Amino acid sequence: MRMPRAVGALRRLIFRLPPGSHFRRAALARAMQLAFASYERGDFEMVPRVFYAQAATLETARGRRGEVPLDLPSPVQGVEGVMRWLEIWHEPFSSVRYELGQLYDGGDSALLVMDQVATGRTSGAEVRQRSYSALRWERGQVVWQFVTLQLEDAMEAAGFDALPEP
Image (tube, rainbow, N blue to C red):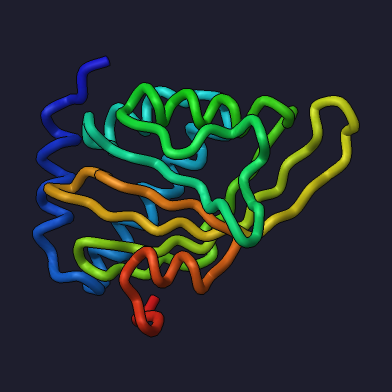
């Protein structure tokens, strides 16, 4: 899948805007909504190919809180690794909906607050969960992402001592 030139040009334009500017925040939030819509329809290829650098790393919290499900790989490398991680994350659910709560823009990093609502593929039970994702980007592409259930861990990973204006 080749990225259209217009997408790359728009991405570079957005990341030249000052962090926290109204247009940049709105553009980043819209990009997240489009990414979530892609995941929700089961397209796990488009977002990593458009938004992630070839050598990107995605990590999931581990350790003291034991957040990582046993079958969820971490860390994963590259666009292919991110796509596989997304597929594995979605496997147990018949549907997953993402709602962006807040997006904190720190310039070269960001913190996303997301609510996930999923329906179990076998049980049909609805599961609601708040999660946090710290991102670092270069030249408008994600080079590193950290997914956790703990706000404090996401803030530390994003390099935030306090949360900036959303």
